[in-house]
Length: 210
Picture 1 (cartoon, rainbow, N blue to C red):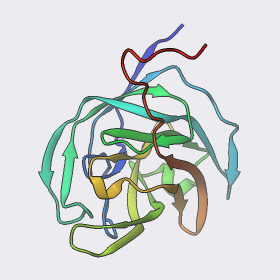
Picture 2: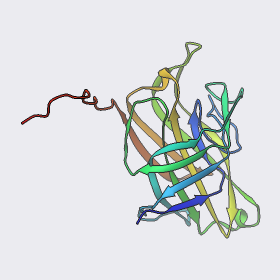
Picture 3: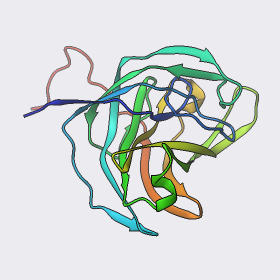
């Protein structure tokens, strides 16, 4: 049975009309604070790095039930920031069609945190994105960024979201999109998606093959 689970934590989608938490960016990501609604979840095996346990428990394509408010931001590569979107998970997949208004990403959990992280309300992490080369409106090239991220510590764990949304034509580039979460010099999570050309739709009224 499908069900909805509202998750009200800070999350990040990079790009033009996308989400992210507090932090700074190199070539930036659009920043958003909002809600993710999940249609079920598929748990991935947990891993452990430097004592911190990690889990990616949902990934794939999302749809924006509420796109949020778009404002300007000098910290992003697109010069835009989106606040308070509402996303709903619709498909568990690693293959992302290159179509505008496509949102993709993953939800993760960190626990067994180090003592220094347990005594503070936030945990200082880094989000890294490596993506296919794209040409920005100013003519410069971008292949990703590395930015600080403050994961909220609640019930001795951190829940988060990271991802991207295609909102501009120049973002529609094929290749690997690699998302990473780092704590100090330790890579905790790596998640890869592949952007591909969408399959052509059949023309309305076309005859079916026999």
